[in-house]
Length: 225
Image 1 (spheres, rainbow, N blue to C red):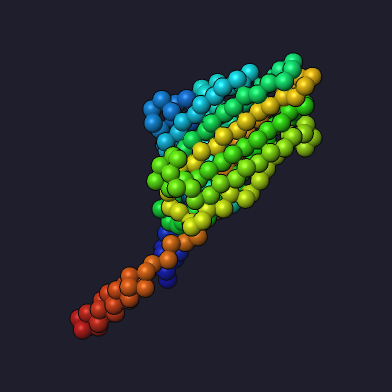
Image 2: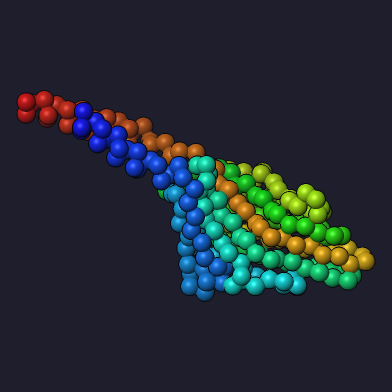
C-alpha cells in the first residue's frame, strides 16, 4: 500500500506543475540585446528581434515579453504601449521576429490576438511562419486588416495554420498602423500568440523495436526467477 501511495504521490507531483499556470518573462530590449530565450512547457522561444518606424510611442525596454502556460495551452505575449497618434494621414510599422521550437509535438496552428483601441485608426498584420530561417520556406501565413474599435477593445484571428506541422518555426509578424484623414490614434496594448500541436508519432520500426526490447526484458526477468 505504501509503495502504491508513494507512486501516486510521485505521479501527482510530476503532473501537477503542467496543469498550473506558469510564466517566464523578460523585456524585448533585454531579449534582443543578449540573445535571450524564454522557455515554457515544451517550448523554447529565441531569436527575438524587432524593427520599428514611425510609432509615436514604443520603447523596447518597456515591452514585456511573456511565455506562459495556462489550461494546457502555451502562449507568447508582448505587453506594453505600442501606439501612433497623428493630426492627419500617417502610417507606421512594427516588425517582430522570433523562433519557436517544440520538443513534444509538431505545431499545426498559431492563434493570434491583439488588444487595443483606436479612433479613425486602421491596422494590418502580415504574419509568416517559415522553416529553417527567417525568409525560408513558408509553412503558414495570414493577412489581417480592419479597424480597431474602441469598444470592444480587441482584434483577433485564429487562422495561421501550419502545413505540414513543424517542431521549429521562424515567425515574422509585420504590424502596420495607419491613421486616416482628419487625424486620430491607434494603440495596441497586447500582442498574443497561442500554440497548438499534434503529438509526434513514432515510426512503426521504432515501435516494433520498443516492443521487442520490452519483451526481451520480460523474458530475462522471468528466467532470473
